Length: 71
Image 1: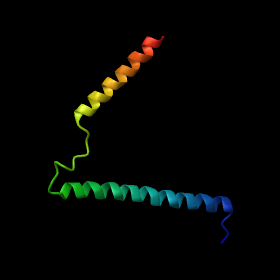
Image 2: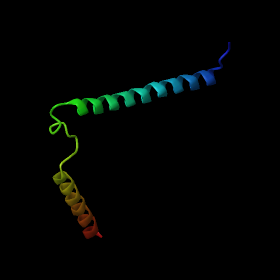
Image 3: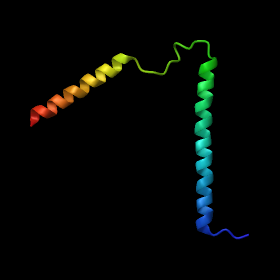
Image 4: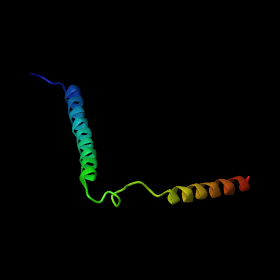
């Protein structure tokens, strides 16, 4: 059986992509399952507090005001 280099490279690339995506999916589900069964759910919360969003919005407004003042 002959596999030319172009097809062989494409086949290898497809296999690497399948392995990478499978690994990412397994890692994601494993983390979600671990968090689901953990006892201390409050400390495992990965969301950022709302105050960080407000600070970021304020900083962005300051930059926009500064850029507008330069014109």
